[in-house]
Image 1 (cartoon, rainbow, N blue to C red):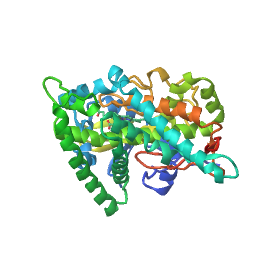
Image 2: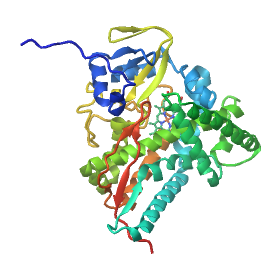
Image 3: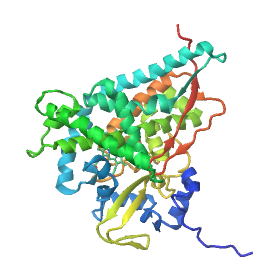
Image 4: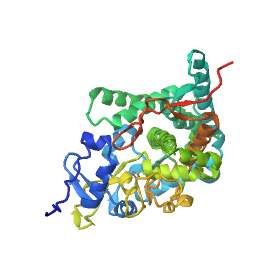
Length: 421
Ligand code: HEM
C-alpha cells in the first residue's frame, strides 16, 4: 500500500482549532512550513528555534512594526527604537531593573504579594463558616496574579496605593484592545479613553517629579540622564503605559501558568516544596513550556532567506516564541513540563545568554527579566507556604486563552485553611 507523503497544509493561526490548542499546529509549522506566508494577517510565520533566535540578533529585522502595532496605544516607546536612540533608552532603564537598582525595590514586591495572598486566605477563611466541606477556595488569577505585578509597578513608581484599582482598570482595557481581533468598537473606544485618562493623570505628576528628590522609580526616571539626555515627559508617560503590558500582563500570565504547571505535576510541586533551590528551574521551565508571549512581530529591512524561502524586504514577520521553545531540534521531549530537564540552561535563563526565547535575545532582550524572576519567586514561595494542600476545585479544568499572549483564564483552587476567628 502506498503512503501519501504530501505535507499537511500550513495551519491558520486565526482558526478556532489553533486558538483552542496551538501546540500541535506549531509542530506542523516547524516540520513542514518553517517560514510561510499567512494571508489573513499578511505576515510571515517563523517557527523554528534557530530561525527565531537568529532573527532577534540580526540587523535584517527591525521593530518598526511597533510604529503601527503599539504606538497608537502607548505613544513612542523603547520597543520600536533602534540604534543610538535605543541604546540611550536602555542605558536610562537598566540601572533601575538590574543589580542594585532592582534590589532597592524588593521590599515592595514582597509586601504586595503577601498582602494579596493574605487577603485571599482571609476571604477563604471567612467563607468557611458557611462551607460544610471546610476548605478554602480562590481563583488564583482573579484574586492574585492580575493584581500583583500592577500593584508592584504602581508602588515602584511612587503612586498612591488608592490608584491600584485605577491602574488595574487601565491594564484590562489595554489588554482587551490588544486582543481585540474581532475589532469590537466598544473595546477600541475604551482603549482610546484609557490613553487619554493615563495621559491626563501622568503628565502633571511627571512635571512635578522633575524637580523633586524622591527615590521612587518615576522620580528617578525623571532625573536620569545619559550623555546629557533625559527622557521627555511624553516618553516617560509612554513607558509607564508600556509597563502595564510589558511588565504587567506578562508576569500575571507567567505566574498563573507556573501554578498550573505545578498543579498538573504534583511530583514536581512536592520537589520544589522540599527544595526551594528549584525555584529558578520551575520559573525557567514555565517560561519555556508555557511562556506568556506566544508571538513577537518584526519587519524585514532586507530580503531574508529562511529554510529555502525568501522573505522580501518590508515584510511583517511573526516570530513564534512558543513554537521555538518547543522545537524538538533544540529541546528533547519539548511537550513535557520537566523542571529537571538537562537541556534548559537555568543559570542563564534570565540573562541575554538564555537558551529559551521567552525574553527574546539580542538588543531588545527583556529589560524586566530579573524583576519578573523576583516576582515569580515571591509568588511561588507564598503559594507553597500559605496555601497548604493546594489542588484544583472539583470539576475544574484549566483552559488556556489568547493568541499573542496566552495563559489560563482562571485557576480555581482549594487549599486547607482554618476558619476565621
Ligand atoms: C515573565 C515576564 C516577562 C516576559 C515573558 C517578558 C517578555 C518580553 C519580551 C518577549 C520582550 C521583547 C519585546 C520585543 O522586542 O518585541 C520584552 C521586552 C521588554 N520587557 Fe519584558 N517580559 C516580562 C517581564 C517584564 C517586566 C516585569 C518588565 C518591567 C520592567 C518588562 C519590561 C520590558 C521592556 C521595557 C522591554 C523592552 C526592551 C527593549 O525594547 O529594549 N518585562 N519582554
